[in-house]
Image 1: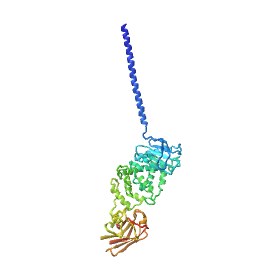
Image 2: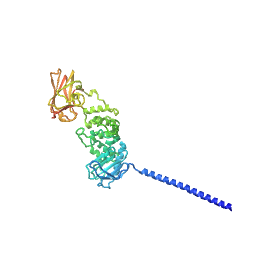
Image 3: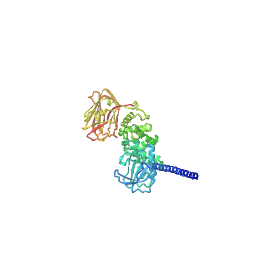
Image 4: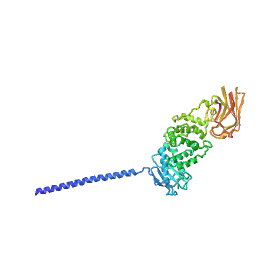
Length: 476
């Protein structure tokens, strides 16, 4: 009996032991499952958090803008805001604007860490649009296009869409490769670059009808810079774009600027503007083709451009493309830098100053001689140890103020420096443009040891300036 009671007690103990053990094990397992679920939920929540999620509203605080605009759409490429007067049923910008920005990044690369373009639309406000980049505090370090005054009811190049893309073009101008202050701004203004940019974007997002529309418009555009009658799209951007790589050409230009054009120490701002010769050189590098001939068609060609282009090729030899060197058979020989110059009146800072008399015969059209005051007569004389044979000479206008140009002058020659022979006389001369070389050819060759230029009248200023006086022998 004692044995039976003991055995029963033992069995009961075993049952309770296993029950408690299993319950405890199950509890631990269940606890583990709960932790794993919680961790999974946390991970999923973390994945859903967008570090650059656009705020639901945004208070404008730039220029004369003071609207509280509302977020109406966002995706990974776009945050779209409307002011209170934009119809909320308008949704075509959602896809179109997003496609524009996605295409831009595919061609030119990223613009900061935030992948979005922030587009702000207004109705019946403001006269146009403006951009800002992620490098600018004024718009909270975001890539922004802020546009009015259209109603935005339809995707139409003439009703706001091209303007919006134009403003995106300024972001590309001002922040590609993380570098501000585009060195070409002074050359293409606001903005002949934008014309080819808008055209390319329409092609890139598959809006061929809009591309053709803008092509038809831009082909007829005429500007007065860098010379009157310039057709930037027709004679410059479209020919080089269509012949040398399209969007790849455009990006190459910016990459070459980033790689080789001077910047500040931080490397985030170009340190100066470029001149026309450098502009042609960098586009030639982008095209891997000498674009001087196309530039001549588009902008005309002058000695200053030639001088700048040759200097650019020396300064930036990393830009590789084939070009023809000028041959002596095709060049004029300029004897003026070899002579000894004397003048009847000197620049106030002396002959060797930046605008002193020696600039008159230094062989560079980009420099000038400046004289203040001009007393209605100025004489410059060049002397040579050996007689110099010439068959032409030239007088070149300087960089500014047409009223300072020489208007009437005489050129003399002498063997002994005393008995002067009149070689040529000009009156009422009007220079066609700045840095223009007015070249006069003789019917017969002239050979003298002394030459004298007398300016008797200028175009009306109390100052006189001349870029170059050249004594020339032009090869046949």
